[in-house]
Length: 187
Image (cartoon, rainbow, N blue to C red; front, side):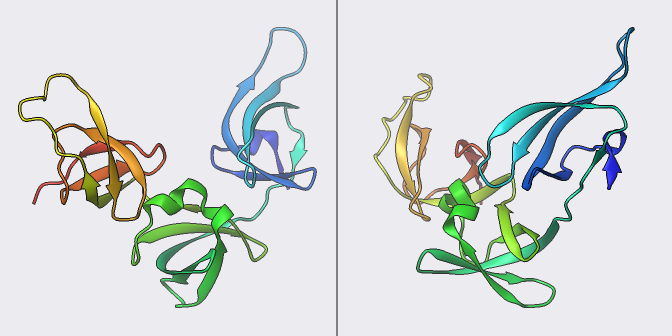
């Protein structure tokens, strides 16, 4: 048990049987009345974000979330198999727990798997990953000033928009949170 005075960004709370991550919080001390804490909470399973206000000093139930570094091994039907890099234990993660991150997952890639009471809550990939472009239409020579984009299929099968000058076979850096092109990877 902790109080609202102990809140930190990223902390996971157990409220009414649901797990919520603290996205942001703010202690407010008005001129009149008691202090309170205004929070923005994100539901761990559904991703829904809500605003919630607590009175200062109120007890909140902090959930223990075990975050471990794991390596993605392979896909088994609808499940994704990960291996704990310390114990070498293998776990099956449902596709729903991965969400959009599955589009940027390559075999052998490192990820952080968050678990609560033996249940996988979510999987965090690094902020960006390097992937090869499997196919994209040829760009127009000299068309670098328009800032236009074209669709490209990555080696994972994901479709993203890339600048016109990017060609098939190139390695690019992709933001795993938004699915957007960041830059080319040289070398």
